[in-house]
Amino acid sequence: MGKLDGKVAIITGASSGIGAAVAHLFYDEGATLALFDVGPPADELAGRGRVSAHQVDVTDAGEVEAAMDEVAAEHGAIDVLVSAAGILEQESFLEMTPHQWDRTMAVDLRGVFLTARYAAPHMVAAGAGRIINFASQLGIKGGVNLAHYVAAKAGVIGLTKALAQELAPKGVLVNAIAPGPIYTPLIEGLSEEWKEDKSAELPLGRFGRVEEVAPTALLLASSPDGDIYLGQTLGPNSGDVMP
Image (cartoon, rainbow, N blue to C red; front, side):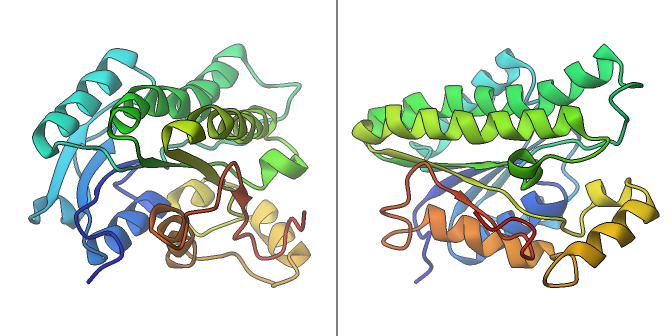
């Protein structure tokens, strides 16, 4: 028996990085998966039973709403939403353009809002559900040359707390995960100097791996493991932030 047997889980950003790791773990634990990504499915899970792949731009309200309705109609429910889609690029604040700011906000914050907005009604109708939003420890502590990313991730943490209070009476538990530096395609785009400096300042002395983050999502998605987590921001972050 898997911890998610019989559950329908939607995972955004599912083709790579943390999203893909969560998808594989959820699949192994028995979930039926709907994998959302902006491009064609890139993960081999997409060809298996209990898995459907959907090309969805999380910044597009119409696409998100249609995809959520499609999954709910096909499977009869949306039990778990994991919002892991995101982008990350370095830029100094004095050089940052409004386009860079808006693009990061669109994917990293608006996308979280839209996916929750159009998944939650299905959960509320069923009287139960779990929403897990991926933030970042930088949304708590800040970061140099990442003002747009920091602001978006801080927004995710605030949104999570607001939704947790509003949706809990309706049976929907909302939480966030704020990883520290994790070896993903997003990190590969950052400078080697940044990565070396960051590793040196971590109490654990190293970045995390995606398979070390995914179990936190499983905790929050499953029962009874995650039954009393509400409005929390869990931090698999190598000791970078200790609230």
